[in-house]
Length: 94
Image (cartoon, rainbow, N blue to C red; front, top):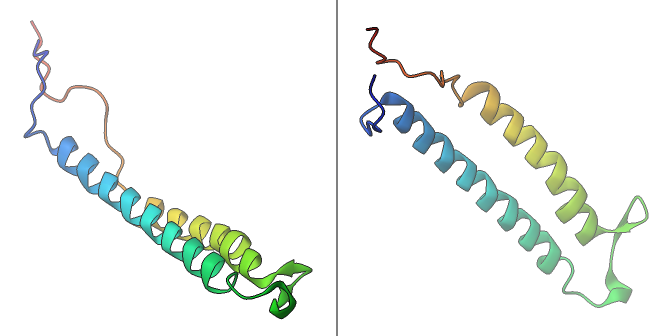
């Protein structure tokens, strides 16, 4: 039975790709949040617009960002991620 890690295993390539997808999603989330929080939130309080009783910067950065990320993560998992078996494909039977 082989106990070493074979970095040429296709599962490592898939894991690296999916890790990069996750990193990209985190960056999108941060840029979205930062852009709305500090873009709209940098005005004086008297000039704030409101959406459903919340300041617009908060609504778009936190509520809108959450909805956006739920949709993006769902699409990524459904269309970009692959099911990978955890058992060793190259097990030898003795």
